Length: 113
Image 1 (cartoon, rainbow, N blue to C red):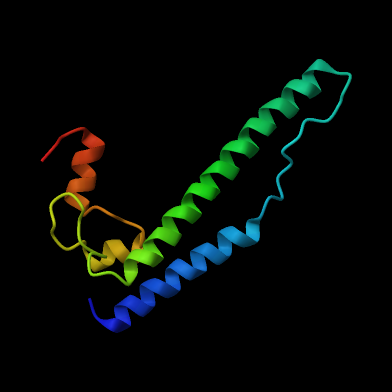
Image 2 (tube, rainbow, N blue to C red; image 1 turned 135 degrees about the horizontal axis):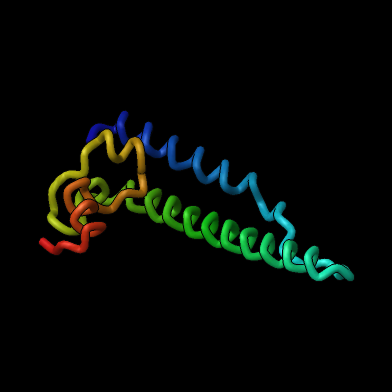
């Protein structure tokens, strides 16, 4: 991978982190007191969605931060399963990818190499 490609991927990772950071915790993570059971159920359901979205955002931020750390190591862009290069197009689409397309597909299909 060339230095220009590394800079491009680093820029993409930083933009992703900035985007996730700017979203913050705008979602309400509390249930208000309400007399109507239907309103309460709706608020409880929305709370579950908000918590799930918050957790997903946090996990994604950790993935991007880890990818930034790996970007400066020699193993960035190398599949952790088979040891082959991860395609540049895949890294541009998902810079936190740790597996090549083939190994990721096998993992999702439940097949081991």
